[in-house]
Image 1 (cartoon, one colour):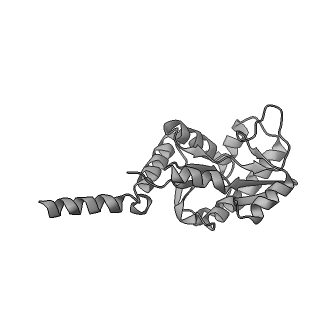
Image 2 (cartoon, rainbow, N blue to C red; image 1 turned 30 degrees about the vertical axis):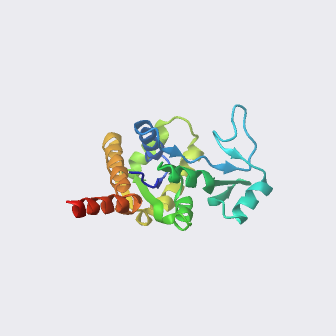
Length: 211
């Protein structure tokens, strides 16, 4: 029975494990579509339109906003970024889920959009602030200034945890991934996401009548 696809939003402060969980989830189920964002910034060497981003001019991007074709959008360092609505709706119609790796602001916009009833949102918390700091330093990718900025931003991000449907405390990545799988499998089985159920039950009732 064909079901309607859902929109799975993953949010967390940097270093809490959101991106790792997203990669594992897509490896577990390759039918999940990762939401590719649109942007007005220029492509970098090796980037392709529709793979890393949908590259659009500012005029094109603003026209999409005006036409309500963006589920969420924001301006970052002078460039616009956002999630186009069309590919998400196409995936939903095919019964495929779309995964969003976005912050609380983007998640809030999507929950308030026309597709809000199909959203399942999950916030990932670190087991402690000390552990969050350790993980950021363990990447060995950022300067002290960047790490300090990420830690300062994390407090504001964590303050929005209660806006989400589910909250995972990521003290063990394997356990958190299993919990995320359980959430997705249960949400896929919700009655209102299986429109063919009505006709199926009608068929069962006809069988009763024919006995």
